[in-house]
Length: 281
Length: 258
Image (cartoon, rainbow over all chains, first blue to last red; front, top):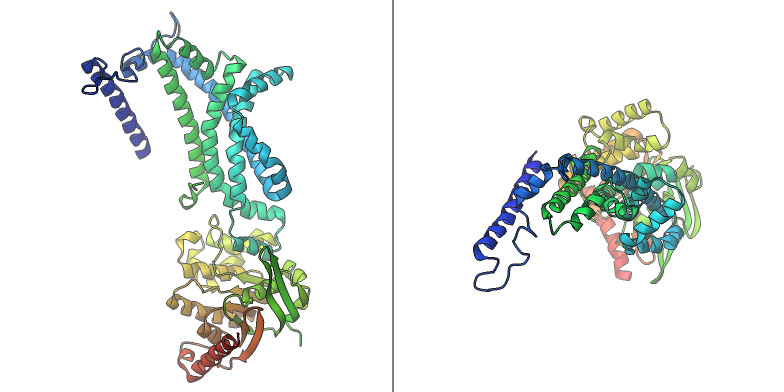
């Protein structure tokens, strides 16, 4: 509850800062006093719409006789979050599996780690069209391609942190399991995975946010009309005429991301006792 | 006589990037069932290495070694020894009881039997009321008692201890020694105990094995003839101090020649 309160306080402060800047802009005619230079970003309504205009845009119909924008965006956000969730789950599973394989086999790690790292240096906007083209050739449903793109951004932090986490037990813990003549499976399930959980949850938080970005970006080459990606693109194009709509869409996608990361944090709370939470990596 | 540990001409060398290190050379050591043997010596004398050879956590470079009349590997797989380290090494995500259950769980002991055995062991180390606590809720001494209870889970004939009280304060240390004495008497298990502390070695042991470094060798074997059961009075007896002096001189003597 305290967390939600702090969040709202900061939100209110940001709104005050935004409006304060605009107010000063209006008072000074868009020029810094003393310095005499122009204020950038321009405090005018065309680049920085009023907070209430953004809120008003949310509740106004996007087109004539249509439903309020917030409803359209809400549906779009749900759609995108669903793609992100599937991508996140697939990516987390793939990342975890890669981590387990790498820890079990040093030669697998040596052989494949460079490719795993290289995969993340290729920008997602280069990968996304390829996935879409291949997906179409394979006749996959559109949303699965978006999920694959989201998974592509998700698996890496999970893989890296799983490797790190599985190797985290101290030497004496490993010796202890040696002394019990534990099988590799027992060692994995009763020592390594529980030790790795704080590391994995840290990665999952990063991945949750990344998967939403991946889904939004993935929707663009897929040409989806239903998701947030399309809405953001569309409002980007009409930004000059109607900036409030883009800000409204940005707010919704941020909210979607927060909800998603929050869900992961909640899962962590329920899984790990407080003493083991939040490993810094 | 069947020895529980029988080492003959045992040696261990480590080969690393900085060359070869002779950790242990020509170790002959026979330990009878029921003995309490301390290994003492300067850092690098190989006492922990010797303990790990007995536990089959390391393989000897040459020589022969039998544990409980078997090949050390067989003895390890059969659960013939329990082990405790300087760090309690409890699993944070398990309660105290489930930490004690761990070796039994890995050995496939049924859940109910495991639980009652764990409760029995916690009773023995006076931690019954902490069974449902988590390790981080306990003091260092309590954690170490849990580790000892865990090591005794399968009633092993041999208990290997690597400086188990090394990280504890002096007061806790003495009461832990007292407690270990009682457990040793009650269970009849053989103990091999690595330590840096001369009074600790003398107080606990029936025999103190003094080692020297580079290469690790056994230089003296001192039988401790203090009366059993030992209590705080023993710590103040003249014989206790004589034995401490004897061990200290055995350790120094080697230092001078090296």
